[in-house]
Length: 406
Image (cartoon, rainbow, N blue to C red; front, side):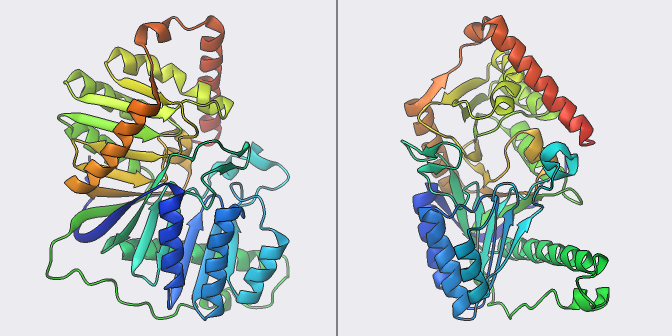
């Protein structure tokens, strides 16, 4: 199994929830001098979202090049007021792959932009699971009683350049597609070469924060796409799980791992590693809730502990292995994330960072986790078992239609 190369010389800060994340993100945008690039699945123009939008507007008005990409499903629309304000400030924004008349009935529409990345001045990157969405608000449920449980990281060092390069390339592809569509439908009279040359109005970036001459945290940015990086995030998980000797703690919102990842967890538990999973306990979607249940039995039988988060919405996609290896990112352990969506995780090899994340996860398990009992699970009502199998079969059928095996 190919290892994810980690490089030293990083500074990495764990951001717990939207309160930490939005304060750090807005501060970085307000300090920007040259360029801000932001990608997100959801950009909700709620209380927190408008604070971020206003920071992007301020940056653009003072001459910073601002590039914003939102997913076309996660972000249904941009309010007219903000579209006008962005246009006036010259914020360059794009909704990725909005659905047409057939919606999600066309399998190509399942390939979403799910990663949450922001690079400011080529100096700092933000990566994690937190959308531009208030912790106490959900588009489907309205105001929430307790904050969403989620994490992100703020990092300096070599991985910033990797994130920046990926975002520049993605923006370039989006603009090429847009220009070709204009040419196809007669909306523009420039050649493809001219269109391509107009895509990168990049200003000079500041030098990345110097880390020469000192040791720092070892870390890596692990990207998933449908071209060159199809399996990198899953491979990173499987390698860490295979090398675990004492403990694995995973918190994941949408959990339906494929056969290889399930077997890795089972083998770890059977060789004496304590494996604890903190999963979403609240019913959110039929496929999400019922589709994961058929895999629980095998895991519970092997000794894997499954705790369902009961306090509110769990949105985290994080893990800690042996109190040293940790990952924070956007990738769920389900087919949509591991096989179809663009995702981004940061992997960190650092004891203090991993212990800080582990402490948050163990506290959540002890205070808000409901532990599943293997015997009670095996005796759940036949109606629930039927719905579980139906959802699991439906998920496999959808992946077959998308051309993916799971």
